[in-house]
Amino acid sequence: MSIFEPNLLIHEKSPYLLQHAHNPVRWYPWGSEAFEKARAEDKPVFLSIGYASCHWCHVMEEESFEDHEVAELLNKHFISIKVDREERPDIDSVYMSVCQAMTGSGGWPMSVFMTPDQKPFFAATYLPKTTRYQLTGLLDLLPRISLLWKQDRERLLKIGNEITDHLNTNQRPSETVSLSEDVPAQALADLNASFDNVNGGFGTAPKFPTPAVLLFLIQQYKQCGDKDSLAMAEHTLLRMYRGGIFDHIGGGFSRYSTDDRWLVPHFEKMLYDNALLLEAYAEAYACCENPLFPEIADAVVSCVLNELSHPDGGFYCSQDADSEGEEGKYYTFTRDEVLHVLGEENGSLFCSLYDITDRGNFEGKSIPNLLRQSPFPNDPEGLKRMKRTLYLYRKNGPACPQTKRS
Image: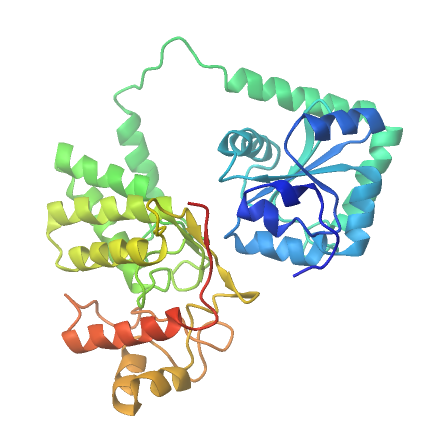
């Protein structure tokens, strides 16, 4: 936690903005004041978009936004604006389109440089403090952009105008929208081509659950009797459950897996992911009656009710990936820890089932998973009691992560 004097974010309500309220960077919230100041001082704008439970947002803050060198450059040469994508999805959507158009990909934290008239000329996602792994660091990038703004501004303005024109042209709604009959067939062909027959899911790491894709496959089975589509969905749903992306202690799914086996996630849990995955498991069960799917759906509901529900009603939108400044601390165990909580006999059984070893599978600790086991049709009562005991131990410990925004 930084101890700098608060910036203008101190008056905001968003947990994400408040996390940055004591950075040495002179952050502004999105609004006319920031852009008017940029025009008055003839400075470009640095826009940073993220959300409270995002692991790499935490990393970028700790590395750069709490750093005096980076803050000095930003404060001297730029007007810096911080946006919470969960509070302002409208702004996030626009600049995510910019980032994807300029780089071919997107994600958070998102970093955009623009004119005081909001025309973007450079976009990226996570940027380290110093240049490494082919990523330009802020200490190199900020002086370069400042110099271009002073000496070759026309080049930046040209880029900004081209990007703005591109987005205006491609996002202009057409009078009529129609899909040809071969669109679902082409979508299925593309999904088949990228399907991972071993691990489920589509493409390579990182892997996202993509519940909308799974629901589309299930729909194709229901409407057309396409058994291959259902098989892809069922296999993916099973493999995700067996991996560490599923929280075998407290239920629910993390946002995505960093590997193609679904073992190691970034541990933030999103309400919308779990809501859509709940629907996917329920729809899949209606088609194939796999006895595991009601158990998984029930565990997702338990997670939402236990950890993402506000006591006054409503739901939190996410749960943090980090606890006490350490990613995944809440979700991982050592073997000794499990033996201490469950006792030698039960603890040894649990560790053998859920791949909890002395060596560990994540930074010296273990993410519980069933990748080395056959899936269970349901949890025996004894195993359910073990999970409940571990959940209460975890829940009452100091590493319990925060939930964000109701």
